[in-house]
Every structure is written in structure tokens, then in C-alpha cells.
Image (cartoon, rainbow, N blue to C red):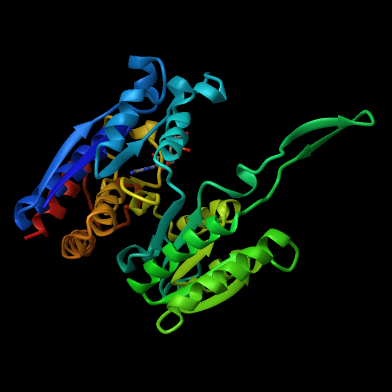
Length: 359
Ligand code: NAD
């Protein structure tokens, strides 16, 4: 199979970790007879330095011409003085918008080898944590109109509008049900329908969409405040969490942080048609950039997600995920996940071990 991948290395550790994940992809490509054609484009701070904007038009064009987009990270102290409209992060929001990416998929997995890093009590961690948060990305209170700050009777009021069109709910619900089919077949839809009208609609539409999946997918509903509690009380109960933009923003961060390993977690953002965007959830880690210390595993696992979701290459994705697990089982750790008795490895060494286990 021939696939075009647009690389957006970005800033900080971005270029280092993308280079390592590309080595893994090339090895997998050779093994399975696939040809991955890589192009590289500018985004974030580096794009500001070279082109004067965090998202040059050429980058959008290159991404749209690809089968998938593979991003490192953007941002850093060098650009912190810029105003919000011209900061590196604007490039990220811009590319999501330009590609129409409405679904954000964030797995939170606790590797048994890293259970010591988990922020939960050992007896809770022992039950396991292997869930995915599917967050709607382009609607909700973040984008609803009207919005603003106005003065009424001499006092200022601020307001936003939490709004969902039923079509927006249907398409994200379908992504959740389809994702569940490839996992443990359970979807929990999270909303606040005891208080919010928009959530009542959300729940109704999710139930309607479930009709086509009733035979094999279990659907449950949970209020967001309860979901936030259940994530720390017993995350093992969740398989797929389906939710809107603002609730998903908060819950996906909560689910990630309890694993204790930021450098291990991948993500995907998908639209109605290709290309999707795949990236680690962590930032550009400017404190360790250029030192060969970055953990490449979140990016390597993002590459596995890309193979699975964008190219339907299940065996290839499984192989990468197993190789990551074997590397951890062997006892290799980068600094961020280091524990006593383990072997400290840098970015390249860690990738070398993963590549070794692809055999
Ligand atoms: P960060 O994720 O970059 O770093 C937080 C801490 O985790 C740091 O100590 C860092 O060294 C460590 N860390 C992160 N990834 C690591 C890895 N792969 N291996 C080893 N250690 C790792 O978050 P931050 O410090 O809040 O932000 C730094 C910059 O990144 C900021 O400019 C921020 O805006 C940007 N950022 C970008 C993205 C993105 O591109 N998607 C996401 C979050 C933050």
C-alpha cells in the first residue's frame, strides 16, 4: 500500500520525536511491503520564525494533499510574548479547522509496567485503565454564538452559548460506536441532561444513533460530574467515553493525568474524510528539547493509531503497540517514566529497542 504522510514536527522536542517515529514507520513499511511517502511542512513557532505565521498556506495545502498528518508539538518560551492571535498554538487550532477535524480520540492506557506512576491507589490501579475519550471538537460552548462581554445597567456580563446541532451529535456518536466495535463494545455517553437542554438533545440523539448498534454495543449514560468522580474511583468501568467539547476537554485531561505518564499517550483527530491528524498529547517540552531525553513512545503510539485508523493497518498497529510493551517489559525507561531498578534510555535508544521488537 502507498500512503502519503505529511509531517509537522513543530517546536521543542517535536522534531526529535517525529524523526524517531518515522524510523519505526519505515521499518514497519519495509516489513509489510508498504510505501510511506513523507512530506514535511512548517507549523507553530518555527513557522513564525521562517514564514511569519504559525500556519502558512503551503502547510494547509500539503496536509490536504496527504492521506494523514503526523504532528510533533508546537510552542515554547521563545514565542510566549506574542499575543494570542499570533502564537504557535494558533497553528494547531488552524490546522484542525482547515481539515474539518470534529472528533478527538484520546486513549488513556495504564501499562502494567508503569503502574507505579499511576496517581490512583494501587488497588484501583490494579483493576486496570484502558479507555478512550471521544470528544466532539468543533461545536459546543467554545464556538456557540452569541458570545461576548457586554455592559448592562452599568455592569458587565459575560456569556457564551452551549449549542449542538443534531447532525454534529450524530456523527460523533457514530465514531464512538464504531470505535467501541474495535474495543470492548461499551460506550458511556457523558452529559448534563439533568440541567442542560442541549444535553437532553445530546442524550436523545445518542440513543437514536445507538439503534443501529444495539445488537453488539452496550450504551450507558452518565452526568459529567459523576463521570469526573468515577474516573478516579474506578476507571476500569469505562471503555469508550463519548462526550461534547467542553466536558471532553476536562475529562480527557483527567483521564490522561491519572496514568501518570504524559510521555506515553497518543491522540487522533478525525474529520468526515481523510486526512486525520495524529499527535502525542504532550507539549513541546522546551526544558528537555535538543538533549536526546524525550520519551518517543507517545509519538510512536500515535503512529500506530495512524496506521490503525487512517490506513486500516490493524496488524501493523498491533505490532508497534506490542513492541512498545516489550520495550517496557525489558526495563528500558526514559527519564520521565524512570523508576529504581530500571535502565535509563535516551530518545534514540528507546526507539532502537522498539524497532528491535518489531522483528
Ligand atoms: P509539556 O507537555 O511540553 O511539558 C510538561 C512536562 O512534561 C515537562 O517537564 C516536560 O519535560 C515533560 N514532558 C512532556 N513530554 C515529554 C516527553 N515526550 N518526554 C519526556 N518528558 C516530557 O507541557 P508545558 O510545559 O505546559 O508546555 C510547553 C509548551 O508546549 C508550551 O508552549 C505549550 O503551549 C506547548 N503545548 C503544546 C501542545 C501541542 O503541541 N499539542 C500541547 C500542550 C502544550
